[in-house]
Image (cartoon, rainbow, N blue to C red):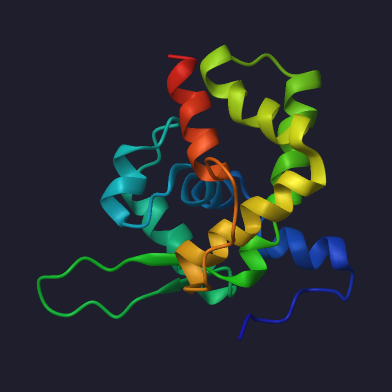
Length: 161
C-alpha cells in the first residue's frame, strides 16, 4: 500500500503520488506509447530520461500503487503494468494535454494525440481506459467497430511524421 501523504489534502496526496514531471512522463509513455519494459521506456523517451532517474521513478510508481512489476525470473525482463489507479488518470492526461495545446508551444508530431483526446472528450477517454484495462489488467477486450483508441493514437502520431 502507498505511504500516507503529508496531509489529508487530496491535491497534496495526488502530487505526492505522481506530481514530479518524470513520473508523469513515465506514465504517459506507458499509456500512449505502450512501453512496458525498462529499456523501451529508456530508449523511447522524447525527453531523454537518465537510467537512474527512470529506475527511481519506476520504483516510486510501484510503491505508490500506480504500477505493478511482474516478477521476472533469471534472464527475463520485468514488465510493468498500469494499475486501475493510473488508468483513471487518462482524463487528467487529456486535460493536461489540452492545457498544453492552448498555452504552450508544441510540435505537430507531438501534439496530435492531445488533439485527438481533446476532440474525443470523455467518451473517448472511457473507451481508452477500457482498452488499457485489457492490455494492463487482463480484462476482456471491449466490443467496437473499427480501430481502437490505441490504434488511432498510434496512427495519428505516425501520420504526423
